[in-house]
Image (cartoon, rainbow, N blue to C red; front, top):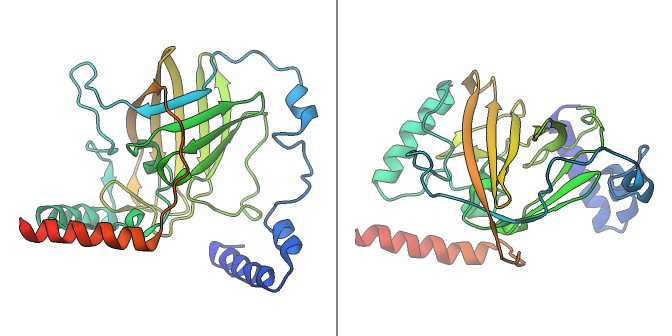
Length: 269
């Protein structure tokens, strides 16, 4: 089943909900009794496992202070990999838009999910809860939700998986490092940095280390053979914060006001 067939299936199921078949919709979407122990299944949680090297539970936020003389950024480049035609064009068009004070491919501003990896570098904090089977993440930015499964499961069969903006994340411990393997991305309006496109072949590896009790290091290794050559690498740091994660929604009316304000500012320049 390709992503277009999946979309058609999802749309059809959504229509069934509207006429009262919510249970069927939930089951078809995978919200049903799992054939394996679910992440919050008491028996799965109670299984004996080696003690993890560290616990991510807490509230974290990207730290933009320079490190070892290197400036930090919410962007994932430069340096960039060698982009194919669509990526090269995006760099050119994005730079022109920036010089003109205009937004370029501002899908986030139109309430599309930021998606991985961009959701990880918004200026909002990230709440994390680590359990024996999984790590639950809630980003304050639009309350984007992500689960990293660490109970030994494999990735879902691509023919059964519903692709999402944060993908399906499977983690494992390698010494003092948590290695997170994420696939299954929805490429619709899913960009990196200034409009660099992604495809459903996007594959992200995150190598996570606890530098000290209040600092995390994430090494990102990203591949997408349809949009760039080789590996796109970037390192980000996160500091522990004493902050709550508020409820946040993206609404068209709110963004219309923000866009209008930005437009007036651009005109004033």
